[in-house]
Length: 225
Image 1: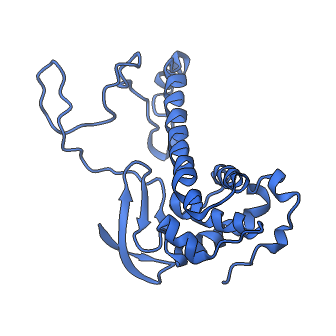
Image 2 (image 1 turned 30 degrees about the vertical axis):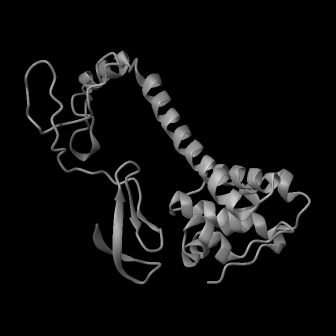
Image 3 (image 1 turned 90 degrees about the vertical axis):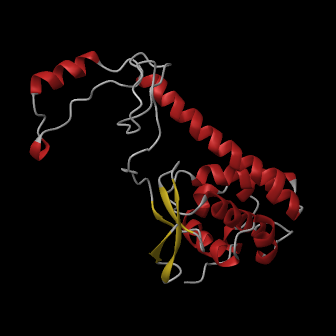
């Protein structure tokens, strides 16, 4: 971990780099300080094959036997000032297309679905059950979490889930104190408030219509600046 200035904490804090998502996250408040960054350092591991090459420096992705070109195809890059370089080579590559594009996109979709299912399961078995929420509230929280993915909310998934639980329970008869939600989700109260502040402008779009139709969204407390 290293120290970086956090705009929420108003000071330098330790940050955690999520290599899977490419996010740099404040370890104290959960704010995503940098999203989808690329790790350009060398991977000091050996990805040798039967050729006997044990060079630990790896360039590009790992060999994937499920793809026709083993994920080692060549891409014609752009030249200086955004030009296409050798136009004839670029045209030939475009004509050939990428027969494995659909497979790669499918892999990415499956990966995203797995991440969402993992969070949804955590919400149902651990968070909501510890708070004694009804099945209707649990379903509303799960659907709201999924819809929140359509917006650029730069918070950790657990922080977003905790803020959504707070949002949904405000509209129910069994309102849950922020402190209880903080204990159940192990997310600091201040972090939940910050995530709620980011989600609040999108409340009408992310809360399911079937849950909001008999409830007044004006009952949601306005986040403090």
